[in-house]
Image (cartoon, rainbow, N blue to C red; front, side, top):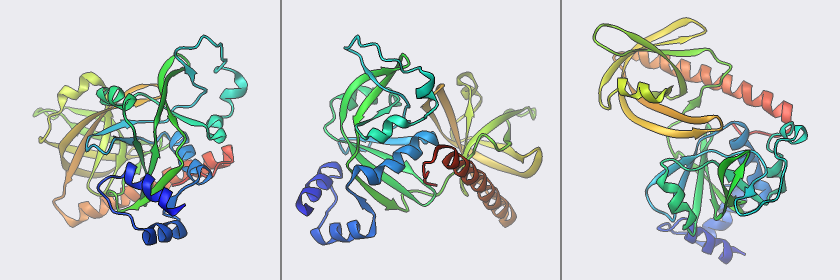
Length: 299
């Protein structure tokens, strides 16, 4: 058994060394998962919390992005009429995952990853929680459609590992929280209100429309005001570091990432308090979803 696990680990995580002793320890400590049942809660969390997944193909350094999709996939080459819009199905979100036969994702972004994925022998999906990342090993199965939306069918992971300190903690902003970032977009002091997607002690990302991306330039400093429930909590400057395009269930999301430029220790303390506030709101939302679905979602 240990030798088989070692072969799989070396296949999906090339360049790393795995000894029989460390594998046994990781299994005992719960940081190495080798059964579908132990991986299922993470996939349910990724779906119900609409988490962004990092996707790595054949151990290459390029990282793509996707999200899990709900629904029963219909292979493109079949004409079988499957009613994926039934009231019974829609009332039980994520039900298909419980069968542990496969998983369904939206197409990757950037789009070139969809071609590479079809010919990849190994795929790693990386999901972040508040304290660690879980890396799940899978393979490509088929192209399909759900509700007439093109999707990717992957094998249900049978191997995963927990990785601590994979990146700095980013608190996801729940829809229930009235959190607004007002950004000064020109020298005349014009401001644009945006919706933060997540925030960390170093920066935040916010959602913009496609045409609004031209208002921001990478490596340029902007002034921000952060409001929660219409209360101004802080004025701070930040530098745009990246733009990203990520698929959502309802379409494409365009993100802009800003790194904070701290001028005082007070600013740093206020941002830390905002991160904690956002995380509490997210945990409350997850608890409500857990109660509604009966699924133990992982924060």
